[in-house]
Image (cartoon, rainbow over the protein chains, first blue to last red):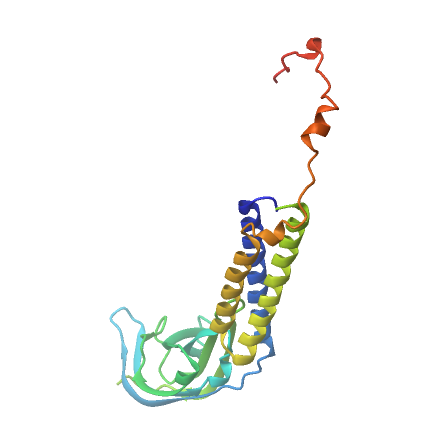
Length: 167
Length: 91
């Protein structure tokens, strides 16, 4: 510690190391949060249901997505990424998952919401298996931290069914 | 800085930084504000820098006692032997 530069270097290195430890502790503190989110998705209407020229089924629907994700936010949360996916089974694939809508929740105040929208992303099948198809709608969320580990989970809602015939 | 001063500077630096880190984390966690933690810690780092890095007078309270010049002349430095002066072999 015999010169200005020596002391400045030692201080800076130690300060940054401690900062890294504080960030690790902040991330670990997220494990003490036990969230209790709730969500509900309703299919209000089937806008149209067609077979494309390429032979794949496509459906467009009106969705009402409501959720209370406030309990997911901690002091170390930057934002929550949320998306709604449709899941169903076909003879070719045991599980098909397709994202219909997503959004970013920037703060706790915005985390209790409902949105009335048609699907943001196209609901297109690999083939033409959708007539009369039963499917689940799952609401997934990713809690993105300011520093450290990201937590992800979902709520599965079942009991949805597509029409028997094209419209 | 003298030796004691260097030791003091190092100890002060470590203790101050750790103390500010603890206070910063506790304040941030309790108030639920990550920004508060970073702010308090940043202030702490700047303060610690101002206290420990410059060569303040209180770091020089135990100056080294150099030998008095009149005393040094009584004990002349040993002369190097002329034959020992060879060019060092370079690899």
